[in-house]
Length: 147
Image 1: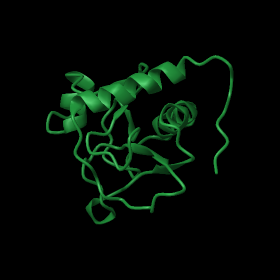
Image 2 (image 1 turned 90 degrees about the vertical axis):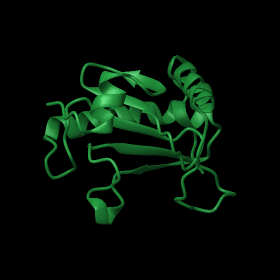
Image 3 (image 1 turned 90 degrees about the horizontal axis):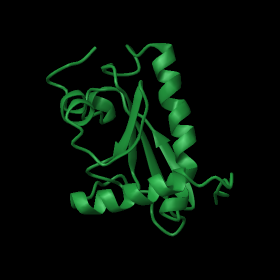
Image 4 (image 1 turned 60 degrees about the vertical axis):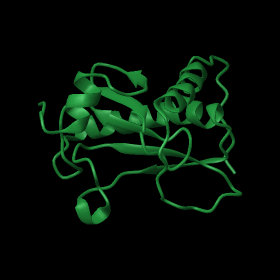
């Protein structure tokens, strides 16, 4: 299902106005345009689901499977020490785009846990996206050790 009013359906999935780091037939991952930290990635199903209440189980599991696959590359690319995986459901839970999405947020031990968002240039997003894509091609099988 596609929803024209949905910014993810229209601008990201259809028009590809994003720094995309991964895509398969069912899922897309791209840089968040208002990141908490450099390397903040969103993973979305290509089918439109508003939140956890209406996403089908298979799509839910596929989004999370891809998040697990991408997380080591993201952590290596931005030299993070840890990672938050998060998902908001409903306006009261701070969901701002009503298309199911999962946040992968790199974290650093010497930085306070803050959820404020930054404004960044598209070129900065693409620079980090390139590093992550390069790390996804890392075939040595290394998995970062989180602190």
